[in-house]
Image 1 (spheres, rainbow, N blue to C red):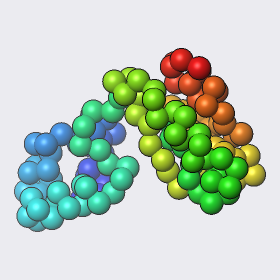
Image 2 (cartoon, one colour):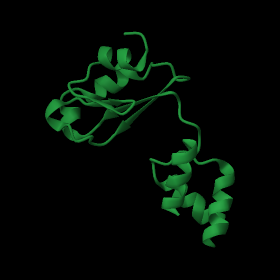
Image 3 (tube, rainbow, N blue to C red):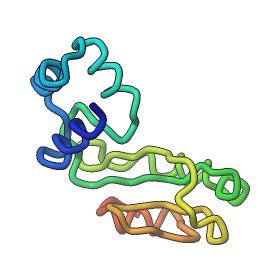
Amino acid sequence: MLMAFQEIQAEFGYVPDGAIAAVAEALNVSRADAYGVLTFYSDLRTQPPRPVSVRICMGEACQAVGARDLLAAVQGLDSARCEVAHVYCVGNCALGPSAVVDGRLIGRASAETVHRLAGGPS
């Protein structure tokens, strides 16, 4: 099921509602089971993604150097354009706080840098 949902998301950018029933039927499982798998994995989405993705690392090393403040500072990015979320450990612990803006890893991230890269006001 997971691989089926990943392939659907790779094609459409998210997993549309109709795909749940199709996957359930194809794999001979209940819709509830398919929905459970879809909603369990945070990397799978049921809504189309926004144009800009911002992820702030909340691993312990990043939190120790200001990740919580960084997350609070970028929460105000335009929600119609940007999706801001926290993640746990992006593997850049020595250069925290870390952020990922549209797949680009940013070490020693500041609110100004994240805003600039996300296309928002500084």
